[in-house]
Image (cartoon, rainbow, N blue to C red; front, top):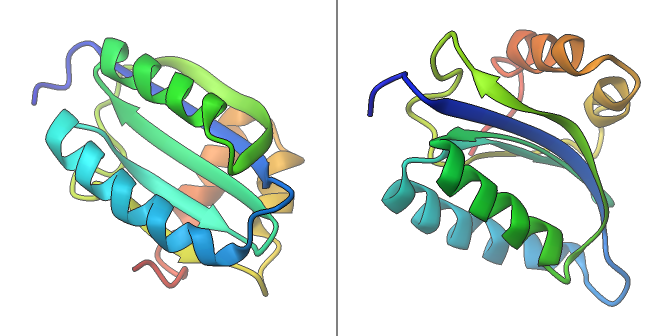
Amino acid sequence: MSNEALSQFAYYSTLADGHSASCVGAIIKAARAFNATHGITGVLLFDGERFCQYIEGEPTTLDMLVQRIRQDARHKDVVTLLHEPLYEGRRYPSWSMAFSDVDEDAIIEQMIARSPHAALALLKDRHLTLDIG
């Protein structure tokens, strides 16, 4: 896929009441299948209570996925950190959906406390030290 006409989206949310952390495996499995088929790449962090995700792809497809995330009953309080065009090319071109369980790490809290671009810079700096599966 060309680097032209790409968008990026980052958000955080909370695991909804009535759902346990065991549902994250199903989220990852479905995300990897959907993303690989639709040209979406990115990374999902989960700390046992909160999700923080960065995704990138063709704008129409990405917007469709954003709506699916917002409607997913496993998420509550979805807060957009960033939703804009991506000019410099994909950050994670080989990851249909990388995942890291960061329950002992404060990276989600640190990302939430920063400006959107500073949060993405933190993720880029830290992704090499995260246990990405």
